[in-house]
Image 1 (cartoon, helix red, strand yellow):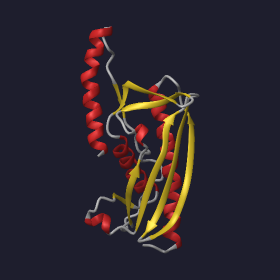
Image 2 (image 1 turned 135 degrees about the vertical axis):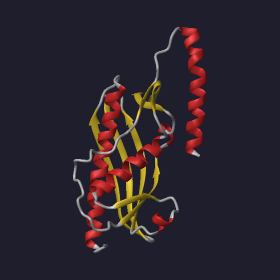
Image 3 (image 1 turned 30 degrees about the horizontal axis):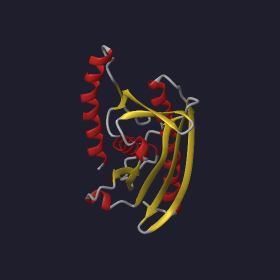
Image 4 (image 1 turned 135 degrees about the horizontal axis):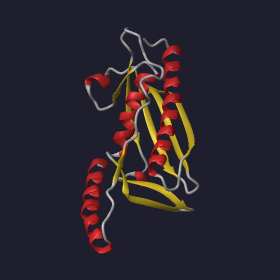
Length: 205
């Protein structure tokens, strides 16, 4: 459903931007951004043994950021959407892809999306992530508030509420995205450490 909304908002904005240009003059080109995984040089895995499989999902993002435009807080109870600064893909897909790569690298596991595939059904553990806030506030601080769970079968092994903040900007969207990326990286590191501990304590191969 999110993908359909993302396409709808993208097409609507695409149709409205030329109209705005005709009314108010030329419109600068939109800039598109992606969250990126942690660099490969951080905690590289050199093990040749088969890694445990971890299924990631669901990964949920709040509805207020459920759109192509990047959103930031502009005051108390006020938010601003930028038509000229946009996500290059749906945010839940982008975050899911980054988490898959980060957890695989940092926790030395084989992370797959919990999409019902045979590989996902063979997973030793499952990770669910519910992001509650993901934006830059009016003071130029990027914030990520989330709840994540590590699950084995029907049992929840760990259930944590986490919050991260990183200095950003109120005007520079490249800096904003980089700060949000930093928050996501920090959650990835904490989650990867918890995964490693869960696997070790339960002697999961």
